[in-house]
Image (cartoon, rainbow, N blue to C red; front, side):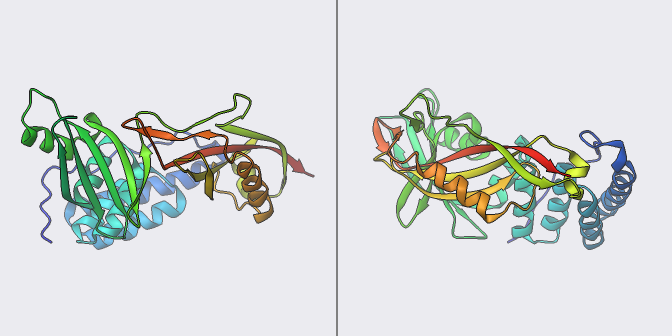
Length: 284
């Protein structure tokens, strides 16, 4: 594949926000290395720039470093690594680049009555297939709307789904899944304490008073919760399997307590996310 990159911005700004003074030396080292990498990137020394960004990321995780590393990889014609890092940036510009370079678009289905068109996007580096349903303006030609939809998807998309073994699992619908019972703490199940050592260097660095664990699961078209998966936590701690299993067991109790998501007035399968908050208590 031939890459034509004309006006991709190389990020020059680097923020210190969110870091304590105790880490200032490390952050300055990250900034210095990041600037070196950016200079090499602008000179066209992509391999050296990529290595410098790796060193900077060992010192500080940051969207700007992810972005410039992604651009270096794209210039090196390494599309898959580009996609990995550009996805981490998660802003409007990066999402447009991700949509342009990381997916092939095919199988367009048009519904003239509903004024929608449906596109299947196939990930170039995995088996992932995403379906997007867009609305096109009745006063605008389909071709104009289609071009608009592919390059600026956030303005026209009304629903999207993952396609797995020919089964659609919606990740965006006009009517998302919701708990049936008002007393279910859906978005934030809370536990009192999670004991951690005060000697833990990560905890010493950040000193959070709580950790939020992230999970995802499927709500079927019948409202059944299944396939609960732990996806990470707010401070990247190593959480014991015992805590994860306890959380999954609690989430399983939500089974049958969901109204399924709806698209075109019909119940559909959907992906959901949920957070469980643990308040920290330090061992002395």
